[in-house]
Length: 478
Image (cartoon, rainbow, N blue to C red):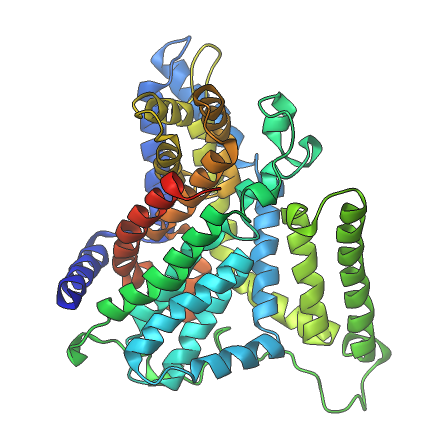
């Protein structure tokens, strides 16, 4: 069994290394593919030239800048997660964890577990913690195959949309004025609490089975036995900091010779003052929710997650200067997302483009999948639909914006649980990230690898986890 899986992983890795384009080129190719599909399948009231121009301007260009607020939320999630992972407390914990494995194979099994747990807490934290932990493991065990453990770190990201920062469950738990477009349009009559989505038996069991059982077992079996097929971390890079070698801002031993401004920048009092005020606001936010009858686990959204991690990071770094240094490093590792997010927003615009009297490409995909689905299989259909659309729109909230209404209406008409269908879409969105390089960009920037180095292993994660998640969505109780 182990030999079969190992050969499959090696074959998949060779194919990906040969044919997978760079992540940015991948986005450009998807743009042309989406445009071509929209030109052919989306109806038009005018001639071909007018039709093509409308898709270009109303769809692509219109979508290019339509998600700036959401893009900022996503960027902050990643940056605050990175800064938190760079704090001394988290760094010491990861160093101790990296020293736990006694062999290369056990280390390869541990990395995806650590990444999965971190991703469940906060997807930005998971990407960063996974990459840093993989590097620390490689520095601890110098002979370990570096690409496969970085692939393991990225694979842990598959659980993120079932976690505390999952876009779809948090949007459903928001009010109409906070981004819940289904509530604003009347498709939903009330918010759906995270107690009905994230904190359900089905979701927790799927997380455990995929993140804590399947992933470590798979990477244990995939790990190469042949020394010639291993690619350890370059010895010259072992001593290089994860920020590319730049000096990290630390607390100076003395403030002698500093100006007043510099003393304030390196003042622990300032960091703790603003940090604890921010955390006090977080406590107040949840206390107010409890007073109003909303428990903390039902009161999560993107803004409060960002707010919490930002001020927790300030406190853990100890000084404004240290936190500024961590955020500077974070910016360097999110440039790929900042560059590519507008392109994927443009693709989303194409996928959502529909002149009056016509259905958008994304809607047609969702409607087509729903139409051909046998009775009782809507959750799996929602899972597969979200997985397909995610290749073109690798943003959970953005994807939900173009397929959410169709899936929720299908749930209503078939008598299927809306929370179950929504979480199926959430897992589908996370599922095909294993073959979509968009979210691997910050992890690759930290590890110094190419998407071609890891994606072959992730293909096997996609195949195995798809079966587990589908069965869980069908049969586990919500």
